[in-house]
Amino acid sequence: MLTNEVLNCKQDVRTLINRVFEILGESHLGGSLDLEWSQRMTSCAGRGGYRRETKRGIIKISEKLWDVASPEERAQLVIHEACHVVQRYQYPWSQPHGSEWRGMMWKCGRKARIHHKIDTSKVKNGRRVAAECPCGAIKDLGKIRAERIRQGKRRYYCGVCKKQIILKNG
View 1: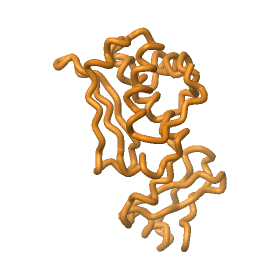
View 2: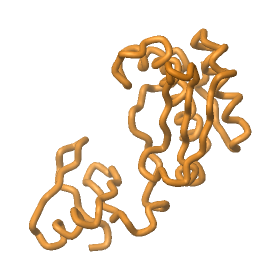
View 3: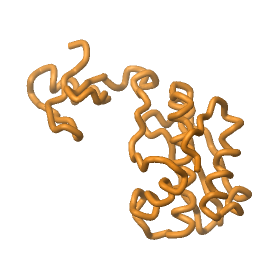
View 4: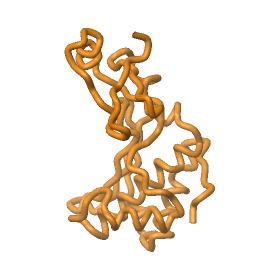
């Protein structure tokens, strides 16, 4: 179980991935895994999967979001993506966040959260506008949507609580 795992540095990532593979009974996948760091990903914190044609797993992590994530969020991200690698290896046609993946997260002692809670507004470079919901969720809207809200032409609603999203600072 990996309930109390935290990651402070990039060097610990492969170790944690191998521990997940071991817990899930697929320790041999550690030797055929490509770990990539992306400078371009700024909304999605990571991607994980298994390529049948090359017989290799792949985990891609957003370097920008990694830098602003807490050690707990980093561990959750790595475990989440490592479970995707095993899930795609064992069940290639299953849903990405379906029952097989949720079971793997549970085996690792983690909640099966689909979305990360890392504040992406720190890495968007002005392309996104921060907005918030009465339930406390922080949203990043594109400039066009934000402008439509400012002008009163459109209303957008939170996917969690269904209340209207309000722009921060205006």
